[in-house]
Structure formats: structure tokens, C-alpha cells
Length: 350
Image (cartoon, rainbow, N blue to C red; front, side, top):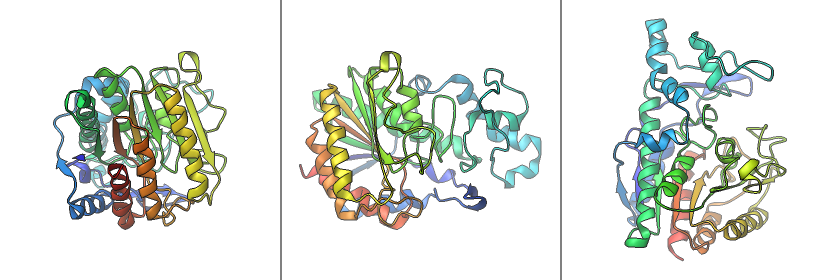
């Protein structure tokens, strides 16, 4: 399989995040991707490439211009406030909720950080924008490689990148995510000629950003298997009654499951998701490949084992669609490499 990997990902290296009431070292660290690369190289069955430059025209079809401008300039503005800030990450201290206005963008930097972020666990630093842009380039290049499948292209490709993306919306970041790589991959597939694309999110946490981006669109079917948002992050989206709106009515499916869910029950949800994707007439599939469903993940509570990811890959291959894999969460870093490689091995065995 073609693996487009992000050579700039380690430029994003958060120092601290707010987690359960205290500042702790970030769970989302560069070694997550390095362990995956190590395992893929050991298995000697994949073609590894770096991406070209990100096609920002595609990115702008997913994210708003003011938001992209903010990400582009945030670090330089932060350091300009006080040179000592270069030793600190940017974390929000205030945010607009409910009756507060969001149509007016204050000039105060802290106010703009709060406007564009939705949690206190996603530090922004000097290399964040470069890493995120390169991640978007991975997603676009992987999608375009797969889109060429009808003329001798590839059945599948992976965008192997961090920071992850599925919590980022059109104009907000959070959940360690800044640009929504899975949504960008879907848009690239549409731009290349697909009439409808499905995004299947198998991360433990609901892909709230992806859902919000496509919620009123009928050209992208969004399907998510995840922990019940009554108790699991991001809490405020991911319920089963969220099915789309306007032109997108009926084109969003959420399949929340309780903590402790093991593979047998999880696989039933995956089968239901794949049936909906088939019924929806998708011509291509984006898999938001978060593997924090693993039994050893430190911030999640599903019970999938490494062997289960082989079966996951087989089920995804059986859908018979041109497929783009995009890495999302997964915080048992050492095991993450084996688990990602198992998904790809199961997929390619079918």
C-alpha cells in the first residue's frame, strides 16, 4: 500500500494539556507516528512517500479563511506579545458559549484563541501550522492516488500523519486536531470526480468536526462508531438522533457504544455502518483510522485486541471501495504501530 507520511509531524510537540483538572504531559506525541513507521518498515510491504505541498484550494473548501489565517499567524502573534512566550504553548483561557457573539472577531489574541478552540487540551506551538499543513498534503496526495484507480491507480492509500484531524471543524480546533485531514481527503475525492464519498470514523471518540463540516451536505455520508457521548469526549455531539440537516438529512449516522465494548459488539456496529455505506451509493471511502479502541489505550475504554484489527481490515476491504486511510487517535503508542499495520495487512489480504 502507498503510505504518504508527514515528515514535519514532529514539529508539533505539545508540552502540556489540561486533562481531568490538571496540567499533564500531552498524550498526543510524535512517537505515536514513529512507532507506526517502524512497524510498517519492519513488515516490508508498503511504499513510503513524503507528500508534495498542500493544495490549499482543497483545504479552503473545508475550512474558513479567517480560521486558516488565524492558524497561519497564531504563533508569531503569541511571541510578539512577549518574547518569553516562545517557551510556552498557546492554550485558551476564555471561550464564547451560548448567548455570546461569534460573528465579531476581537483583536485581543486570547479572545481569538478562545473563539477558534473548543477545549484546553490542544496546545498550539511554533511548528503546529507547518505540521498541520503537511498533514493536509498527505491526505490530498493519498486521495488523489486512489482517485486515479480507474486508470491504473491504487485500490487504497494511507495518509500517515499527526496531529490528527477529525475533531477540527470548519472554523475551530480541539481534541488535538487543527485541520480535518479526513474531511480534506473526502473533498479531494469529490474534486477528482466521485459523486458521493463516505467517511467512516472508527476512532473511540466521535468525529464531531467531520460531522459538523458535512452535516448539511448530501455528497458525503458520515458514519461514526464511538464511545457514548453521555460519558465520553467530545460529549456535545455524537448521539444517535443526529442524522443530518437540510440537504444532508439522512446522511449522518452515529453508532455510540458503552465503555467496555469488546470486538463482537463493535463488529456488529461496523457491519451496520458498512451496510449503510453500501446503501448510500458511495463511490469511495475515507477511513478515519483512530485506534484508541485498543484495550490498552490510556484514555479510552473499549476492549479491542491487536488481532481484532486484522478482522477490521478484512471487513473494510470487503466493502469493495477505493479507500483512503487517515490516521486519527490512538495513545497506547508502542502498540499503535502493530495495530495500524494489522488493519492494513487485513485489508490487503482480501
